[in-house]
Image 1 (cartoon, one colour):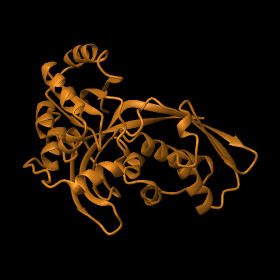
Image 2: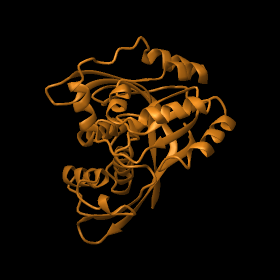
Image 3: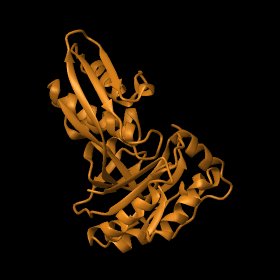
Image 4: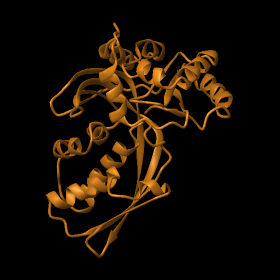
Length: 282
């Protein structure tokens, strides 16, 4: 029993006020990319949850897939056990939503396996308890995400974009990035809007999508890690239409107008950084 758990890219991310809960209001355009982890599930006779992974640091109760399974077991009094194996390809603490994607995939799969018959809406209500990005992955594809992540409006049309992802081998915890944002004296300002990006996606206009890209974390993470600026400079040198930090970083996304230019950039970048991946959005 096996599922793919896909990464995401934020094509637009605006951060609003900090709430009493500690979360922030956000407005984001998010899209799945074909980079994915592989998750397999095995029923257990004993009533327990086991997490295995090709990355040993994920084999603990803080793993979001574990938390998803635990949440379902407690809420619906499930007495069956499950072994979950997560084979990671998505870098950890990279802004690509790997852990959140794993959690959503686990919620969706175990909902079926255990016959819980929960609707998508109900799964989203559970997902937000695990993390702010998890509800998006319940829907997948491309969506406008608002609130603290619980308001997900899937777009009717999507655009397939050729992208290269570059991770410099640094981990940036989302909580730390929000801390940097809150402490920043000058908050990011941009005239770009989510609507601008959504309109471009609807028209499948890759150049306009690139023009509309924005992320409030971009400059803040770049100030903390100068290698981000270097990566973006290289993207410009290799004909990317635009580049910026994905999510809370430190992964940088470069958008290209064709698979040929994306492939050429990939081959030039792959020996420069620990993780370089050529892929597409869905």
